Length: 514
Image 1 (spheres, one colour):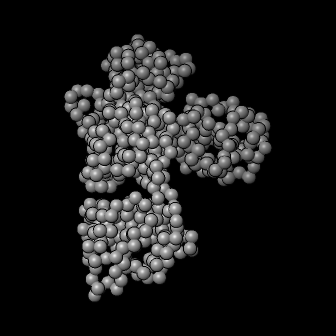
Image 2 (spheres, helix red, strand yellow):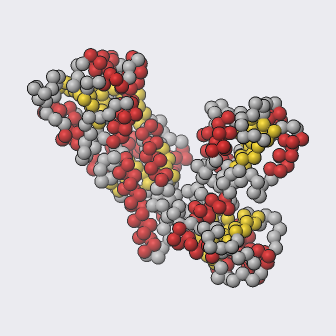
Image 3 (cartoon, helix red, strand yellow):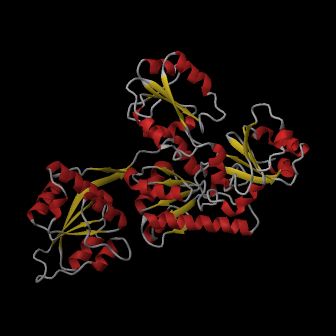
């Protein structure tokens, strides 16, 4: 049928891809965005619901009848719907009910998992063969494959398949890779040979979905492996921040191969009495201030919300000088439509801002007053520094920070039991609040802090600080943790050991070679 949007109900059999939710086709995302109902093949596909409209129904049962009643139903299928899939009967049911359907190809594991494992399936070989071990196979025939042989659904019989291929004439030295959890941060690959499969897979603990790859292409993995060699690959990292603050940090951690878990420790709330902020906004518009200094993205958000309440926008900053304490705050201002005039070039802190702030000069500055919209628990460092430079400060409470509710029990247990590989502390308050609502992280967990003051607080709580950012920014903190992870990995390889995540070093942790 046409790829144009239908006017009546129909069923879309959509390939969900190999596991990584980002390996979804544009057409698949478009259909998910329009769907009235979605049928999941497994719970692992639930992250794909982020493409759906609010209120979409996750359906079960006879979805053909839903389409017959006029609904657009997306039936998610693992990998590619037309490859080792059983949608033929479902598509026939659509035809019998006179319901239109569409089949949207997906990225198949046969190519995607190999790409993520660093194995080129058809490089300098004459053949690329895919077989399904769940169906009866003549392994003697497949032993004659002159290129790369990819086997679905065979991990539980991998040793027997290897022996059958050798019996069929395949050399026992033929390279083999077995990979499970492909394209996700659970990906786990063992490289062996047909003759050594039994020994190398003895303690591997593989589960489906998994692929067996047989052929000389496997030898390329040493040069092309890029995914499982990321510095924080598979690390479960706790990000104890507010939800708004943690998003960009989490994206950076994902790029390093980590699995970030955001646990709010601070809840941002309006001030108890809004009159002070109301007067400050009025003064800002009427020309009371020469400067406005923002010490956090939350302060920018608080002022922006007040502006919207009064029908104002970024044009109200015309004629004002604006300072930002660091990159994250500057980014929030730019998104608001305001470009900061002053940003510390060194330490991103109140001290760093004061170090570069110009002294008040009555000949150059018509007004000597600075507006500081800040949190209720702010320190006096900035006020003292600006006062010394000759400025008068209106230190206004723009928002309150209160301790968040405790996270769910499984998260608390993982924190105290060593289930996390690392935790990132971006301020002293995140240390205090996390310990207060969830307990102290286990001693195998890597503790990474944003600066000396946060390190001091962590040590006061009996935590061993392993990583400290070279400058006080969340970006630098994530980079420092990645550098630490890379060094740990290199040290293990240099010693002839298998790299292990910190959580795998706790007593009772499952020991699985990576």
